[in-house]
Every structure is written in C-alpha cells, then in structure tokens.
Length: 351
Ligand code: SAH
Image (cartoon, rainbow, N blue to C red; front, side, top):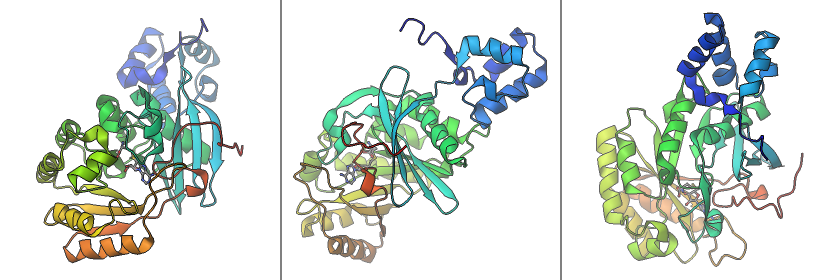
C-alpha cells in the first residue's frame, strides 16, 4: 500500500499548472499545448499514448503523475444497448455509471457520491447509506471512461446516478464546468443536467450560475405528508419553500426546471395526489417527467399501471403543464433510475 497514491493526478494541474510544469521542466512552449490536448481533449490515460512527446519526457512525467482513471470492476450490457459499469477509485470505493447510446447520441448518467445519505424510501441507493462524496475529477472520469469505451463523443450527461449532487455541491459544479470546458469533453451546458431531491440552498446557488446548466427536481409527491414519507431526507425543505425557490430560479434564469415523478401504486397516483401535483405546477414554468417506479426487490412500493400515468398526463396537460411519459432504459440490467446499488452479488460480468 505504501507506494500507492504518491503520484499526483495530472488533471488537477489545470492548464496553468501544465504550462508552469513544462517551463519548470525546461520544455519548449509548444509542449504545453500538446500535453493539454492529451490530458483534457483526447482523454489519454497513460503517458505512453502521447506519441508526439519525447520518450524521456513521458518517462519523467510518469514518475510524478498519473491519470486517476477508475478501474472497471464489472459491466453489464442491456438489450437496448445501455451499458452499466461498476467503477472503482484509488481508495477502493466504487460507484455505478450508466451509458445510454441512441442513434448518434451518447448520454451518460454519472454518480456524484458513493451511496447516498438522503434515504428516499423507494430508492435502492438510499438503502445502503452514504460512503463518501466523489471529487470533481472522479465525476468527470466516469464520462471519460464511457467516451473511451464507446470510442465516441459523449453528447449529454445527467447527474442522476448514485448520490445527491447538492449534498456535494462544489465538486458537482466543478465537474459540470470541466465537462463544459472547450478544453475537455466540451459538452454544451444545456446538455448537462443536475437532478436534486430538492436541497434549497443548492437550488438557490445554482440559480446564480452564469452557465445554462439544466435543473431537474425529484418531486414524487406534491402532498407534504406523502413526500415526507417518501423522501425523509428533505423534510425540512417543504413543498412551500421548494415552490418559492423554483419560482425564483425560473425568474432569474428564464429556464424551465423538470420535475421527476415516479408513479407508485396507491401512494402518489390517487385522485388527491394528482390534483395536488396539478396545483403545484399550474402557472409555473416547468416540465413534468412521469415514469413508472422501477421495482426494487423486497420493496413495499409497486409501480402504478400505465393507465394512471396516462391519466395524470392528461390532467396536467389540461392545466397547461407540459408532460412526458418516460420509458426507463437499462431495466433488464438494473441500470434504471433508483436501481443502482453497487452491490456485486447479482451483478454478472459480461466482459
Ligand atoms: N439524488 C438526486 C439524484 C438521483 S437521480 C435526486 O434525488 O434527484 C435518480 C432519480 O431516480 C431521482 O429522480 C430519484 O428520485 C429516482 N428514483 C429513485 N428510485 C427510483 C425508483 N425505484 N424508480 C424510479 N425512479 C427512482
């Protein structure tokens, strides 16, 4: 274990750091540009790949730096082409990442924490609790891993894997900026989406960012007592306060937040629940995504029948609220929303 971690993550240098390093190593200025390209644009994961750098320089760099690329422990491939990876970081902690290819698009769902502390009653990640938050580089490295695996550019990223992004706010924003950077994956801000269970200070800070990142809110019920039961971790951020914070968000940014609503039989698909959701949304700038709850083994919660989703969509649209019924992807490999649980048992490798 002793020699582990003595190397520094090359990504942490940033462009200025790389410039200083090249100067310090007596290298000509054009090496800075080459090294930045390899590290941030081409996503190199070893110095050996950097064939336009002299061998001696590559060896010197390798003595001091590495790429902190996660190790792929396992992967599963869905019938719909989605891939789920179990990726392990230097300290042995692992998270799940999901890649969803579609025509000429490639979306990635990243984790922001190993585990999650929010305890949502219907979510598999929540059951195991929080292990630790990820660093910005660890969040970005999941995207790099997928880009390399598919040999394609990643076109959008959703922060909807394990963890609560706004319980790891600074690393989340730093990762968004790295993904957005033209010296990096260069993904447009609108194609970068953060999903939160409704941590209000996070929403307020997010509203003030100059970038047009997209915001999604896990709502799941517009009835306070039901929401408290489903999402006990955000009890103190009441629906009233949430409504206010989102009003402020839309006024400030002019952007439309998305509400995620996973329909659970007999819990949030009843007539009063539907009415409460319509009231919550009516007259506000928002988009509602309805999905059927994904079944978690041993859970008392069951998915609502499709006709309930259709009924709720109809009712929302009658009240002028744009609504989409979403299909879950990767369900056959437990890669769908709320099913990530970094448990190795039952996670069969298809590599
Ligand atoms: N902590 C963030 C990010 C997790 S995103 C958040 O709460 O938004 C994952 C999305 O899947 C969230 O909307 C979450 O509420 C939802 N989800 C969790 N378990 C689910 C399940 N069993 N079925 C459907 N959606 C679920």
